[in-house]
Length: 221
Ligand SMILES: N[C@@H](CCC(=O)N[C@@H](CS)C(=O)NCC(=O)O)C(=O)O
Image (cartoon, rainbow, N blue to C red; front, side):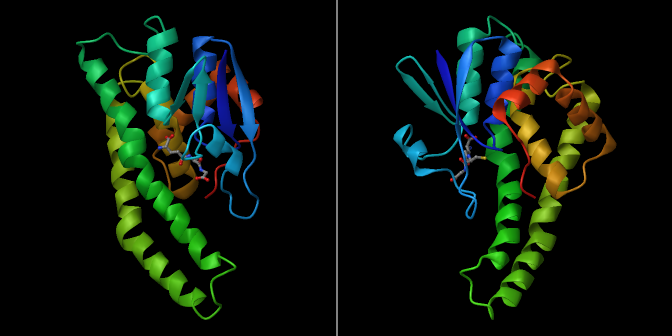
């Protein structure tokens, strides 16, 4: 039995969604975040040394990193579902977006989140807070926001070519890309095309079942 080690309101929601799309049986072990730090609980480190979610276990295998998990599940249980045929242009797009989601899209989203939270940290001396706020607001405005806008423009132009990120069918690439889009929706303004895309994937029955299984899914902004 596949076990998804799922951290509340996190990237691992995508793995549950994928398993629902594939119709493969699985169990979810849910972990709550520390309410102060929002970090994962230490017991996640007993499953994988980094203690980050998602992680899956499947018989004797332990797999971390969303992209690797999605590749493994589609290769092992997909029977050709959710992946374009090899050798096609869509397959290359699939590989690109699968890697790009965590490798390029998420870093500026995470940085923006961290930069907005540091000035509010209770352990920061009060006289540093206004300086920190100004510094991080400056970096966000001059560096992170333009980067995020670049990414949004890239996604928009890709979805002008086809309904999904790797062609006209939903694939694992869309499952990976859902999280950067959701993160961007909470930290920037999406184009109408990207908003419609998000609405469409959120309306999928498998996405809705995954939400029921994974529990409340409010991203930090
Ligand atoms: N690139 C990794 C990122 C893993 C990651 O940062 N997971 C977050 C969940 S959104 C986490 O576990 N955060 C809690 C922590 O770092 O304590 C992946 O896609 O699996």
